[in-house]
Structures are given as structure tokens and as C-alpha cells.
Image (cartoon, rainbow, N blue to C red; front, side, top):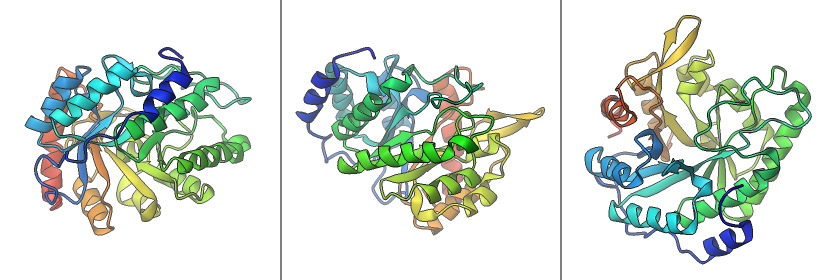
Length: 318
């Protein structure tokens, strides 16, 4: 793992305080029942410019951290962490979660997954480094004043059944470690990993009964896996176990799917936002653009945010 030694890194993190509690929602705490945010590197790698766009142009008070300056969030050194904190304070942005790459690796002893070489946002950590990835992600959460760390459940296997109990055990162990630090792991349903849909998410949540283990519900990923995410997938989920939500849209493309700007695809996002509001959800709804039709990541995110903002307004959630 590149960067500063683990012991020095963690010691440095312990000495840091959380982001200023004076940061506030850019458009008012009561403007939405949700923490309306964007994943920072969907806009770009220049974190200062990203913060300006998210805060001043999009009107957000929250941001999700995945990577900046062409480095994954768990690889930042202390100077980069300090600069990130400075920019967050400057633009009065609070952090929804640390979008770590935890457990985006092959499960040991299983056949190699066809997704093993999938793009992973400047993250290329080995199985042996996953404990350190978790430690760093927890430290980042503490440094940036959030209680949430995103995780996965290993690259998708053709037949996960022989390994599923052991995978769930690993998730339980990680959640127990996070709980001791006051951190909640949010498992993202991801087509390239072993939990892709609402139906599969419900099974994992049932198997991993921990108050420090919740779901990062991603309707776009569920749709790209062949599920109707709302209402079908959503209706299967225990609502009190949803701890984060990613927002992107999808369209049919041949036998598969492609990304679309929010509101330009097949997902009933207005219905999903209404249901989340009805069910008392009050955590993040975070724009994860993915769609590249705008020409640049920033312009694509700008157009997708325009659609997402309209959908939130239709749902009386902004």
C-alpha cells in the first residue's frame, strides 16, 4: 500500500479533530429531509473546484468522498487530509460518508471472478491489505466527521453459494470492528460484486444482524442487474437498515443497460424519493453520475443534478 506507514498514519489521524461543526446545509437544514450530496470525483479530481461547484452552484451542504487529486480517499496523506478539511470548511460542506473500496477484491479460495479487473477509482489494494483499508477508512471517517464507511462484498462469483456464509462472516467481523470505533458500514449493492439487487441485499441484511451494518441502496445498480428497483427491489428491503442512497439512472441498451442522467432513464426516482421520505429515511441521497453523455464529468454531473433536483422537487423533498 503506497503512502505513509500505517502506524504513523493512524497516529496522525488520532491527533486530528473532526470537521468544524459549524458547517451547515448550503440551502437550509429544513430544505430537504435528506442529506442531498454528490460523490466528489464524479465532478472532477480538483477538489477545491469540486467543492465550489457542489456548494455554490448545486447548492449542496453535503458531499461524499471517494477520491481527489487522482488518489483514492484511503490513500491520502496527512497534508492532503488537512487540505481537504480546509476546503470543506471553506465551502461549508459536511461529509456523508467515506466511499471506500473495502472488499472490492476476489474472495480467497474461490474461482477468479470475471470482474476482478474492474475499474475501482484509483484503488488497487490486495486481499492482504483489506484490514488496513478498513483501518484507514475508519480513520478518514473520524477525520472528516462522518459515521459511515461504504463497503462491498467481494467480486461477483458465478456461484457464490459455497462461499456465502464465510463472506457474511467477514462482513460481521468488519462491522464489529467498525462498531468499536462508532462507525457504520454501508454495503453497496453493486453488479460486479456478490450483492447486486434489492433481493440479494435483503438476504445479506438478514444474515448480518449488526447495528453497525446497513445498506447503501443503489437503485441504478439494481436496475443494471435486471431488477425493477422501485417499487420491486425497494419493497423487499428492511427500511430501518438503509443507511445511504446513491442516485443514478439507467436505460436499456441491447441485452444490457447503460447509464443515463437522472430523470432520463427507466427508474421511477420521484416515486423512490417519495417512498424514502414516507418511510422516515433521512440520510444521504448522493448523486453518482456515471453517465458520460455531457462531454466531461463536470458537465455530465451538472446535467444529471438538474434532473435529480427536479425529481426531488416532484417528490416534495427539496
